[in-house]
Image (cartoon, rainbow, N blue to C red; front, side, top):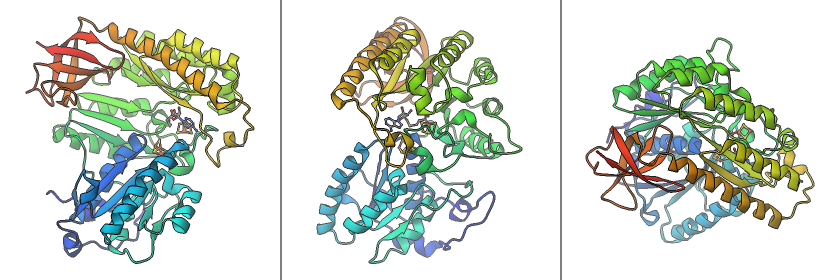
Length: 466
Ligand code: SAH
Ligand code: SF4
Ligand code: F3S
């Protein structure tokens, strides 16, 4: 096993932090023991889990996918919707049961729910079998928390955002594509959203650190990077001497990495300069996730999204006209408090006008502490469910239509691995982020190849390597 360099992993760009020095003695402490790591939520959490895995392996733990084999279980939680709570406690029930047989099992909770005060209080009051809790700003404390675990719960949460860490070690899930954080937190405070509270204010990494990370990835054979942030195109805005997102994209493009993606863009921060840069560089993928949230300007205002329906449409068409063959996907929330039938119709109108490649759709879920949760909502859940159903049907019809445009065409696909459903095939993604199951290419994993598309469904394509 390649142990991460612990000393290096603890250097911060701006300020030193207090740490317990982890030496070789600690690295052997948990040798032979196993960790089970479960990740809920968005790409941010997926990437944080890559850091958590590296930290666990630095102590000697090795990974298992079987809960019953684990000596430590870490649940990396999401707080975006209310049902996240039920999902977590459902799983915790299994862990609690396991701990009855395995007294030394360590159970840890982290991620966005661990930043919620009421959740932590509940854990302290009702769930004493949980040993450690750490928030999104405290991942660096993980080794300390495990080593210093006592009879009492070890809790390390809520501390303020602090500085940006550099030289973090990750145990990346893929050797082909990598997540690269460019920014942490979010300053937008959309009225329905809990993220600014769980992830803190926006903190951008220095561009030279980002470029260094991408250059290292290129050296290590990575083909694709996805620049990661809640609001990637607001990159650098809070730093005095930093470049903007368009300039950062250009610098990343010049590292020579074969594919660059980025999530998530906010329409309000989308500039003409960005559009031009994306169109100019072949290695910046023509794929943009551009959350709409609602097609009604009235609801958008209540959501605090800072754009109108018309402004979204203008931006959408500008992107479509300037970037050849671009694919655009979106997020939509139905049933925001007191959303009328008329508001919902406007959302459908925008979907018809944009014909998105695909969309994530959600029923609004009130999150305690956010402004929207205080609104007295008169719309019954059944109405919201019906709206979601109608919206999904429309979205799916456009996804199918968008995919059908690929029939008989030859496109570039980065092959990532063996298909889950059919082990004779491999899978990968087009430049526009379409999932393709490919015949005849079992020896092409990690390569970008030309694939002829033979079939199109709503959620994937089939193709053959020729
Ligand atoms: N920063 C990104 C994504 C944030 S979370 C952005 O602004 O687009 C991902 C998606 O979850 C959001 O785009 C939104 O559609 C959805 N979401 C966030 N809060 C929600 C809530 N309270 N109820 C339902 N959906 C929500
Ligand atoms: Fe949440 Fe809005 Fe920030 Fe996205 S931009 S994370 S929806 S507050
Ligand atoms: Fe969930 Fe936190 Fe991401 S709330 S969506 S894991 S930023």
